[in-house]
Image (cartoon, rainbow, N blue to C red):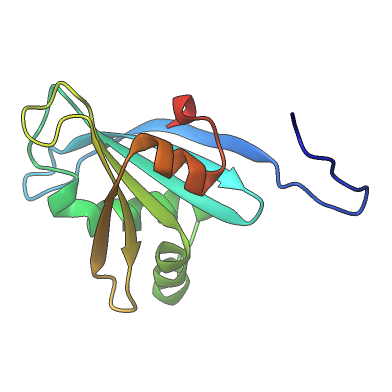
Length: 139
């Protein structure tokens, strides 16, 4: 049974604002992953899924480059300071499809520190869905 929400309570709308492919990262600019951007209120969640067909270069090894590109595209930012702030404020999720031999079926939540160093915390798909506040099928 659901809980009652009084008329003064604002429930943030959850929406997928982008589903696309990120291509061209890594040393040879041949990296490939899938990107889903979920917006909930003022929060942004960037879900990055490794490509089964193209495992290298990996999302893990190039997460900062992918984050800079993705935030530039979503927020249309020119300022390096604003880009950095948007990366730090956002929540990043890395997904390894079950077909991938190592880490297959795994998930991680990534946060960037003030120097844009990524910090991974492994979690279940259900835990990640709970953090975002969506059904696990949206991940």
